[in-house]
Image 1 (cartoon, rainbow, N blue to C red):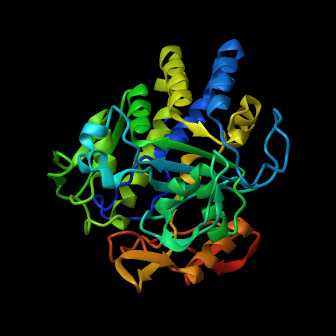
Image 2 (image 1 turned 120 degrees about the vertical axis):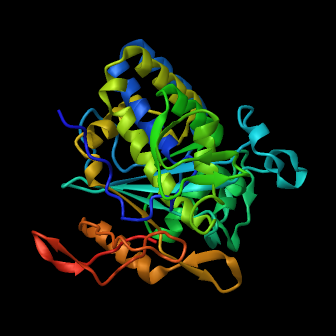
Length: 383
């Protein structure tokens, strides 16, 4: 049987991307799913108990009760990756974990996974960490309330009010209800990647030479795990223009290949690897309360099982330069409207394949998309 094709990416320079641990949640979700469905029984119950102990509430509760059937309608899952100073990575983070002024937990990876109604498609929207927008008033786990901010970087939302605050921030920006969410740290990424025996990535262009990240890699395929996985996700100066926007391609590549690995026979047919992965995911993912129910996890897994990675599209939320800070960006609301309209109508999303100023992909709202059951309409891409 030929291997399943990789997710649909916009054509870009192979070295244009990166991104931090977004893949983790996808792995965590798939893993928890595998735990509930494939492992089954008492062990799955034990895993679900551990998930529930760490679960946090969200402002938007799911509209339908968990059941062992397909989830009705479209839904969204928020994946948040944080740069916490976990024991296994703090020595590699340098000043980030040694400078007292750099304390706090930042949500540097923010991904909204939109799963459409039939025909089922998955669209993963990345929000750059340097995106400046309104942070709403948020209630912390201890009951205290943060006042919010009229304009702040999106990666300050977690410190302001935890996973629920990130969900509220993204929901306010996009207009999408977010019933499911999960958070993983960079250290969690290392643990999850190691549990599946590493992930093969493709190093493009002239390779990656980033002194700060401690890597000097030649072009070509490379299996990364442990510190190498973390370095690949954090490297910035060795790719594109060295900006946060330029690293998104690596993030997208890593996530799609990690998902391929998790869904491969190498993992699913190996009980030892499967159990290790389920155990690692549960210990390394902080879910919303809505994702801590094994029946719900099984339901979402059942809904997603027939969505091929070829029908999974990765895009970046459209942005514009921030007029107040050249190192930051602000929402491109007109460009985003094209994207959300396409998702609401379940229209296929076509990427332009062109490179933007940061060597990312450029939104082309004028390009029509053929839709068998509807007139041609503008098609969003990503930047």
